[in-house]
Image: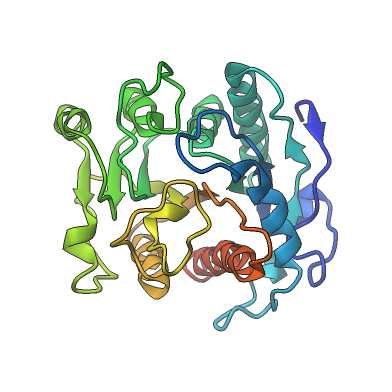
Length: 291
């Protein structure tokens, strides 16, 4: 793959070290942090998730995702220019897809998703949409002078012609409201989901049959997972987050997902474990809905 630095292995304590061809789930750590605009620390997120994953049980409560094999690639080298890092992410994701495997990307700030989507496009993937859980819309054209800011990632996605459905947003600008209308973005904001603990919804009939799911952990309420740089109150609960993901899996074929913006807090291992468990629970949902 591209120029890489070494990382740990997801669930190394329980899952054998398989060859890439023998594993369904391919974990790609991307410790990229360039444009965070409040709290930092997302560059440490992937390593913390990988370390905490060794404390997980293989049985996730409903199935054993590990039986399908989990391969962890070395982390993308993020000590380069943003365009170079995004190109490397795209190349790595495209390679996973050409192997016929399922990408699971852990970051890192949300800009990473633009590199991931470029990887799908490079691999020839078409007729797919993105479903996003996030406190923020990330639809600004530019932020703090950069079009590659974490606040602009979904703008780049929709400009590439990829349909978008947003869940749990509760902090966005008038510019982003206009971008939703201009690009046909559908959404259910937090005020439509959280008060009634809504965990199931119906995607529009015209939404593509395949979905890449991007999860910014600040989409969850800070009382559940405060380890992120831009927390916003009024977010999704633990079971609600998983329920919304499973609701998508029931309606469409999920072709990959990422979990981003996790920023570990020193001494609070519970949050590292929660992020690792979230990754594994989502693998389990994918496994059960693709049988």
